[in-house]
Length: 251
Ligand code: PGA
Image (tube, rainbow, N blue to C red; front, side, top):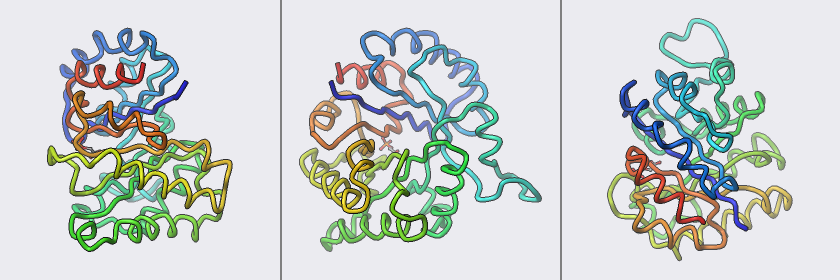
């Protein structure tokens, strides 16, 4: 039976009250027949601990949306990977397009963060994907290959062990315009084949997720595809009932 990884990326949303309401039913509901899946909740950093206190299920893990490249020191406003690990974080999103575009994160910085996350034995969720312009110019695979190459060149052929890749076409994020599931399957296969060239074991085991305007209506077509191992969900994950509906499609 296929095992999926569902990640709820709450972005800059949530409150203490929201978390309390969310988890009233979420813990028990997410377990019904779904133990085989991994569920990750990634709230804003300030609410990580609050979410952690509310998780009472073996298959739900805590995720962070970002991490600093430094471990400790005079870096006002930042969050260290040591701190994330200290409070129970297991997964960390890195290279999300909103950070690449709105916070000027380049591949060098992303590699540093990716490496740090792995060195502390946490699991990076590395986001890759093309912009609308790049897609129009037929550059999708070139862009993704470059994003993966940087990691591989810097960290070696075992770089993708114990990692997650999230294919998130920039044009599909938060637009209501999800990509075509067949197109996504094709890109996921391309990513898996790329990894296979260097590390066949990782290629077989790695979770490759799709993210971009997923909801309970379109999710099923995606998870049916052989190389789609999960979903990274933004706005639809803010409604716990909608998120549960998506998870339940994997039954
Ligand atoms: P969306 O966001 O589901 O709201 O499109 C996905 C993401 O950015 O991870």
